[in-house]
Image (cartoon, rainbow, N blue to C red):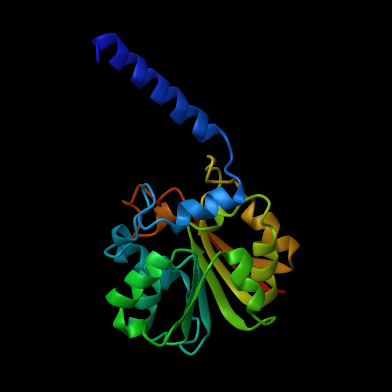
Length: 222
């Protein structure tokens, strides 16, 4: 292959990458991406050691009773749930689209052996929960990936949760990130915003560039 053809291939690759970042994946395409054993930039193994984010989460939960029923939507490998369990929250459960992440969860965190982990897209799994059956639903960098055509995910969270703690960005947008207006969505579903905190103001995540630009919103049902 000549030098000129190498340059041509690089240019074509760069243009394709830029094009792909502008378009929006359809829902099956999006779900297939997250079901991979190691999605590009989101391998489950990469989340095991980042307990500083889990420490921040615990602080943001405030005085949530230790016997509260807590559900993480998008629990991935289960690091947050395991950290909460280790700090006295034993009634935890998760929803996770990736069976590979859940398999690793079971191997990595034996304390979650009895935790209910619902495997499948949130669009499909949340419908099985009864109204007001969860004391707190929380998410961390997950709602930003909910497809614009999957608004039932938000309504189902609103239906089952008595309170909600969601850590999400305000303006991220790509073919797999959608700039949902978290405050407007959940206030429209009957929640009252208790507070919002920038993650760069949290001691544990101030120096974590991957999440320091995110915000934590804490809602209670009116």
